[in-house]
Length: 203
Image 1 (cartoon, rainbow, N blue to C red):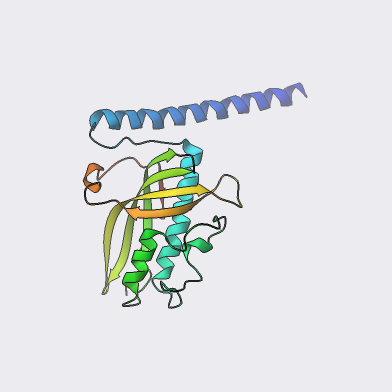
Image 2 (cartoon, helix red, strand yellow):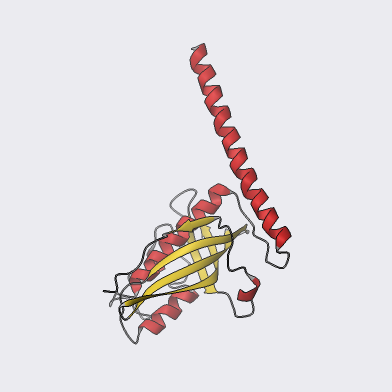
Protein backbone atom coordinates (compact mmCIF):
# COMPACT_ATOMS: atom_id res chain seq x y z
CA UNK A 1 0.00 0.00 0.00
CA UNK A 2 2.86 2.35 0.89
CA UNK A 3 4.59 1.64 -2.44
CA UNK A 4 1.36 2.31 -4.37
CA UNK A 5 0.85 5.61 -2.57
CA UNK A 6 4.46 6.58 -3.27
CA UNK A 7 4.05 5.81 -6.98
CA UNK A 8 0.87 7.88 -7.16
CA UNK A 9 2.63 10.82 -5.52
CA UNK A 10 5.60 10.52 -7.92
CA UNK A 11 3.38 10.29 -11.02
CA UNK A 12 1.24 13.18 -9.81
CA UNK A 13 4.32 15.30 -9.21
CA UNK A 14 5.64 14.57 -12.70
CA UNK A 15 2.32 15.53 -14.31
CA UNK A 16 2.20 18.76 -12.27
CA UNK A 17 5.74 19.68 -13.34
CA UNK A 18 4.91 19.02 -17.02
CA UNK A 19 1.78 21.20 -16.83
CA UNK A 20 3.76 24.03 -15.22
CA UNK A 21 6.56 23.76 -17.78
CA UNK A 22 4.18 23.77 -20.78
CA UNK A 23 2.16 26.63 -19.34
CA UNK A 24 5.34 28.59 -18.65
CA UNK A 25 6.58 28.08 -22.21
CA UNK A 26 3.30 29.33 -23.69
CA UNK A 27 3.30 32.39 -21.45
CA UNK A 28 6.96 33.14 -22.26
CA UNK A 29 6.26 32.86 -26.01
CA UNK A 30 3.33 35.28 -25.76
CA UNK A 31 5.40 37.76 -23.76
CA UNK A 32 8.27 37.55 -26.27
CA UNK A 33 5.98 38.21 -29.23
CA UNK A 34 4.41 41.21 -27.48
CA UNK A 35 7.86 42.64 -26.73
CA UNK A 36 9.09 42.20 -30.31
CA UNK A 37 5.87 43.53 -31.88
CA UNK A 38 4.33 46.10 -29.49
CA UNK A 39 1.83 47.30 -32.13
CA UNK A 40 0.18 43.89 -32.50
CA UNK A 41 -3.03 43.34 -30.52
CA UNK A 42 -2.07 41.40 -27.42
CA UNK A 43 -2.21 37.63 -27.86
CA UNK A 44 -4.33 36.58 -24.90
CA UNK A 45 -4.86 33.05 -23.59
CA UNK A 46 -7.66 31.75 -21.38
CA UNK A 47 -5.54 28.75 -20.36
CA UNK A 48 -4.59 25.67 -22.37
CA UNK A 49 -7.78 23.74 -21.56
CA UNK A 50 -10.14 26.57 -22.55
CA UNK A 51 -8.06 27.40 -25.63
CA UNK A 52 -8.34 23.78 -26.83
CA UNK A 53 -12.08 23.68 -26.16
CA UNK A 54 -12.57 26.93 -28.09
CA UNK A 55 -10.45 25.66 -30.99
CA UNK A 56 -12.44 22.42 -31.14
CA UNK A 57 -15.73 24.37 -31.13
CA UNK A 58 -14.50 26.53 -34.01
CA UNK A 59 -13.51 23.41 -35.98
CA UNK A 60 -16.99 21.90 -35.53
CA UNK A 61 -18.59 25.17 -36.64
CA UNK A 62 -16.35 25.55 -39.70
CA UNK A 63 -17.08 21.96 -40.77
CA UNK A 64 -20.79 22.85 -40.86
CA UNK A 65 -20.13 25.95 -42.96
CA UNK A 66 -17.98 23.97 -45.41
CA UNK A 67 -20.72 21.36 -45.88
CA UNK A 68 -23.34 24.03 -46.60
CA UNK A 69 -21.69 24.96 -49.91
CA UNK A 70 -22.65 21.64 -51.47
CA UNK A 71 -26.02 21.27 -49.73
CA UNK A 72 -28.91 22.19 -52.04
CA UNK A 73 -31.31 22.10 -49.08
CA UNK A 74 -29.41 24.80 -47.19
CA UNK A 75 -30.39 28.31 -48.28
CA UNK A 76 -30.97 31.58 -46.44
CA UNK A 77 -34.74 30.96 -46.26
CA UNK A 78 -34.30 27.54 -44.64
CA UNK A 79 -31.38 25.39 -43.63
CA UNK A 80 -31.96 22.28 -41.50
CA UNK A 81 -28.19 21.97 -41.03
CA UNK A 82 -27.35 25.52 -40.06
CA UNK A 83 -24.72 26.05 -37.38
CA UNK A 84 -27.55 26.52 -34.89
CA UNK A 85 -28.24 22.78 -35.21
CA UNK A 86 -24.94 21.96 -33.51
CA UNK A 87 -25.31 20.25 -30.10
CA UNK A 88 -25.31 22.50 -27.05
CA UNK A 89 -26.49 25.64 -28.86
CA UNK A 90 -28.58 28.09 -26.76
CA UNK A 91 -32.19 28.41 -27.97
CA UNK A 92 -32.00 32.17 -28.41
CA UNK A 93 -29.04 31.99 -30.76
CA UNK A 94 -29.69 33.34 -34.28
CA UNK A 95 -30.16 30.81 -37.09
CA UNK A 96 -26.96 31.98 -38.81
CA UNK A 97 -23.85 33.88 -37.84
CA UNK A 98 -22.98 36.97 -39.86
CA UNK A 99 -20.33 35.10 -41.85
CA UNK A 100 -22.58 32.08 -42.36
CA UNK A 101 -25.39 34.24 -43.77
CA UNK A 102 -22.92 36.02 -46.06
CA UNK A 103 -21.74 32.66 -47.42
CA UNK A 104 -25.29 31.47 -48.07
CA UNK A 105 -26.19 34.68 -49.88
CA UNK A 106 -23.20 34.17 -52.19
CA UNK A 107 -24.00 30.48 -52.60
CA UNK A 108 -27.53 31.32 -53.79
CA UNK A 109 -26.09 31.89 -57.26
CA UNK A 110 -24.34 28.54 -57.56
CA UNK A 111 -23.56 25.26 -55.88
CA UNK A 112 -19.94 24.30 -55.49
CA UNK A 113 -17.79 21.55 -54.15
CA UNK A 114 -17.23 21.73 -50.44
CA UNK A 115 -14.23 23.83 -49.44
CA UNK A 116 -11.98 22.81 -46.55
CA UNK A 117 -11.40 25.31 -43.77
CA UNK A 118 -8.49 25.15 -41.33
CA UNK A 119 -8.04 27.33 -38.27
CA UNK A 120 -5.34 29.01 -36.19
CA UNK A 121 -6.35 30.49 -32.86
CA UNK A 122 -4.63 33.83 -32.22
CA UNK A 123 -6.27 34.98 -29.01
CA UNK A 124 -8.89 33.94 -26.47
CA UNK A 125 -10.36 36.34 -23.91
CA UNK A 126 -12.96 35.33 -21.33
CA UNK A 127 -16.07 37.53 -21.15
CA UNK A 128 -19.18 37.56 -18.94
CA UNK A 129 -21.08 35.58 -21.61
CA UNK A 130 -18.29 33.17 -22.59
CA UNK A 131 -15.20 33.95 -24.65
CA UNK A 132 -14.12 36.18 -27.52
CA UNK A 133 -11.64 34.64 -29.95
CA UNK A 134 -9.57 35.96 -32.83
CA UNK A 135 -9.32 33.10 -35.30
CA UNK A 136 -7.45 32.95 -38.60
CA UNK A 137 -9.60 30.89 -40.97
CA UNK A 138 -7.90 29.51 -44.07
CA UNK A 139 -10.30 28.32 -46.77
CA UNK A 140 -9.07 25.99 -49.52
CA UNK A 141 -11.56 25.78 -52.38
CA UNK A 142 -11.72 24.67 -55.98
CA UNK A 143 -11.04 27.20 -58.71
CA UNK A 144 -11.70 25.02 -61.72
CA UNK A 145 -9.36 22.07 -61.30
CA UNK A 146 -6.96 24.03 -59.08
CA UNK A 147 -7.02 24.65 -55.33
CA UNK A 148 -7.08 28.30 -54.26
CA UNK A 149 -6.39 29.34 -50.68
CA UNK A 150 -7.33 32.48 -48.74
CA UNK A 151 -6.84 33.39 -45.09
CA UNK A 152 -8.84 35.94 -43.09
CA UNK A 153 -8.83 36.80 -39.38
CA UNK A 154 -12.26 36.49 -37.76
CA UNK A 155 -13.71 37.66 -34.46
CA UNK A 156 -15.86 34.92 -32.94
CA UNK A 157 -18.00 35.03 -29.83
CA UNK A 158 -18.52 31.71 -28.07
CA UNK A 159 -20.72 30.58 -25.19
CA UNK A 160 -20.55 27.50 -22.98
CA UNK A 161 -22.36 24.48 -24.42
CA UNK A 162 -25.78 23.90 -22.89
CA UNK A 163 -25.35 20.12 -23.09
CA UNK A 164 -21.64 19.35 -22.60
CA UNK A 165 -19.61 20.64 -19.68
CA UNK A 166 -16.30 22.17 -20.72
CA UNK A 167 -17.29 22.65 -24.36
CA UNK A 168 -18.21 25.80 -26.28
CA UNK A 169 -20.38 26.77 -29.23
CA UNK A 170 -19.93 29.62 -31.72
CA UNK A 171 -22.55 32.33 -31.21
CA UNK A 172 -21.29 34.91 -33.71
CA UNK A 173 -18.62 35.09 -36.38
CA UNK A 174 -17.50 37.99 -38.55
CA UNK A 175 -14.39 38.69 -40.61
CA UNK A 176 -12.39 41.58 -39.20
CA UNK A 177 -12.89 44.87 -40.99
CA UNK A 178 -10.34 46.28 -43.44
CA UNK A 179 -9.29 48.70 -40.70
CA UNK A 180 -8.80 45.96 -38.10
CA UNK A 181 -7.13 43.23 -40.19
CA UNK A 182 -3.79 45.00 -40.85
CA UNK A 183 -3.23 45.31 -37.09
CA UNK A 184 -2.84 41.54 -36.79
CA UNK A 185 0.34 39.62 -37.71
CA UNK A 186 0.62 37.39 -40.77
CA UNK A 187 2.58 34.76 -38.82
CA UNK A 188 2.41 33.83 -35.15
CA UNK A 189 2.47 30.87 -32.77
CA UNK A 190 -1.18 29.73 -32.59
CA UNK A 191 -2.82 28.72 -29.33
CA UNK A 192 -4.57 25.96 -31.30
CA UNK A 193 -4.53 24.73 -34.90
CA UNK A 194 -7.18 22.57 -36.51
CA UNK A 195 -7.79 20.51 -39.67
CA UNK A 196 -4.35 21.09 -41.16
CA UNK A 197 -3.19 19.49 -44.40
CA UNK A 198 -6.65 18.82 -45.85
CA UNK A 199 -7.66 20.04 -49.31
CA UNK A 200 -10.78 19.65 -51.46
CA UNK A 201 -10.76 17.22 -54.36
CA UNK A 202 -10.78 19.45 -57.44
CA UNK A 203 -10.10 16.76 -60.03
